[in-house]
Amino acid sequence: MTSLPRIRVIGELMNNAYGRARHAWLARDVAGYQQLARLQAGGGAEILNVNLDGTQRVSVRPAEMLDFLPVLIPALQAVSDIPLSFDNPDLGYHRAALRCFDRAKCRGKPVLNSLAASRPHLDGMIALVREHDLRCIVMASEKFLPRGGSSQSLHPRDSYATVRRFVDLLVDRAGRTLDDIIVDPGLAPVGADTYGLVNLGLDTMRLCTADPHLRGLHFSVGLSNFAWGTPKAAKPLLERAYLTLAGRVGLDMALANVEANSTPLPEDDPLVARLEAALENGRTVDGESVEEAGFRQAAQIMEICSAYTDA
Image 1 (cartoon, one colour):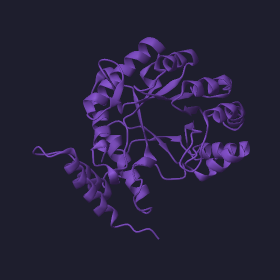
Image 2 (tube, one colour):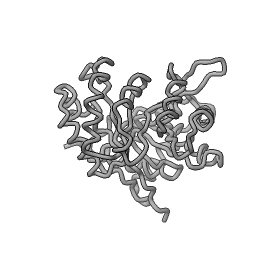
Image 3 (cartoon, helix red, strand yellow):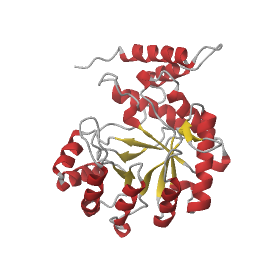
Image 4 (tube, helix red, strand yellow):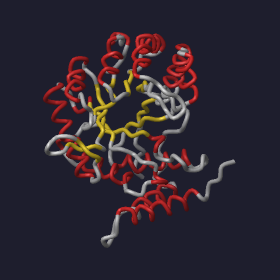
């Protein structure tokens, strides 16, 4: 039997989508954030993600984040030496976070989360990666257009080309090694994935891991996206089944909740085969549309979920 992949967890609890983080943000409760850092470190997280963005439940202005970072970052470093991942699309956020980050108190490289083809200040972000000797997360779900600009990647070849371009940029202009680069191939909610996006991410990893030029890259997904909207009893098992499938093609990291089980299911678990079959049935055949195949996949996912009921 194939050995289970080891998934290194990037702790995601410092995010306003979670109630504890949201309450800490609203109160500017530094001790609350420190508690989340300790909890995740104790739960096995190897990197702590710091995301202060607003959600549907709380509005956050950019200036508020910039004002709080000089208080928050030293407080987190006072209770944990785990590398921090600064999660925001804005260059100013990363500059502010790094100004108050003490590299001497960190046992590894901090992470810039994330680089994407659509970033308006991409050159500045790459320069920041070099200046501060950072690891970085690269979004493969967007592609560079030939005449400038960007758009969504809708084919694994597009995502693969994005990865190749970012690797070249980061090696040549930021002095990065492949070990410094973490690729996010994208992960959609499987229950609503009528465009084949879950398969797109898996196929992107297949293409990348088959390329000797890219050997040594890391791959990470936002795991909590995958089973969004499914029954609570099914959610953790579906996530673990996905980790088994994705681990086969290179996934070795995940942005995840340390309080959930992020261990891949055994290969012989029936749910792994059922999920794999559902995803394969989501591939187009005989000239059908992507949507037609996607609805077929969604129907199978609903059938899988019907065995689980929320109390």
